[in-house]
Length: 193
Ligand SMILES: [Zn+2]
Image (cartoon, rainbow, N blue to C red; front, side, top):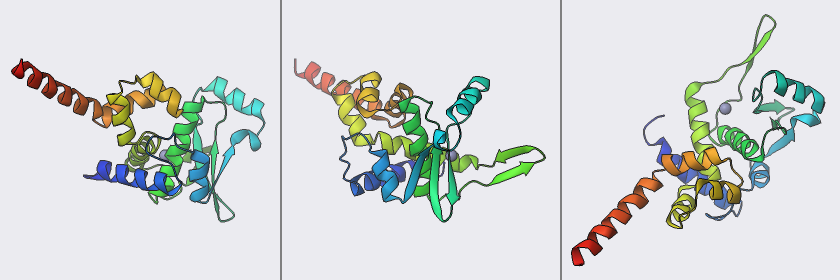
């Protein structure tokens, strides 16, 4: 990721959250954010039979998460409704992050019988990072960490996966920040005793 992107992503996330009236400590309203961006969210079982999705899931679990398409001038995000809520919200936030960042909709390339979605590794990393900021912005994490919330509790309250909550607690640096503040406080009280 290019230098400065992480801090920029926090600012971008805060901006886009506040634009839809989502306070720092509110769970992200993905539907509302999609609407504000002019994007339709469509569960894949609106387009294909649910059985087909279940078959695919059996053959290769987790193979399909979500994808963004241009349909008649509108942007459409199709997602897999079989995934857990936390995973679905991560997938959707990832797709919205691509759109916010102005990434090009991925092109489908045919190689013989195979259809491949091409993606740019750098853009995927950026979308992942911004998605995390949208779902769990740093100020929220800082408050949660101060209140000693576990990753599990954060995930439950903010409807993310536990994996995402744990990742963000670490990656955002709030655990280190809280740890340092605590150590400083202990030193202080140790000195004065
Ligand atoms: Zn992506």
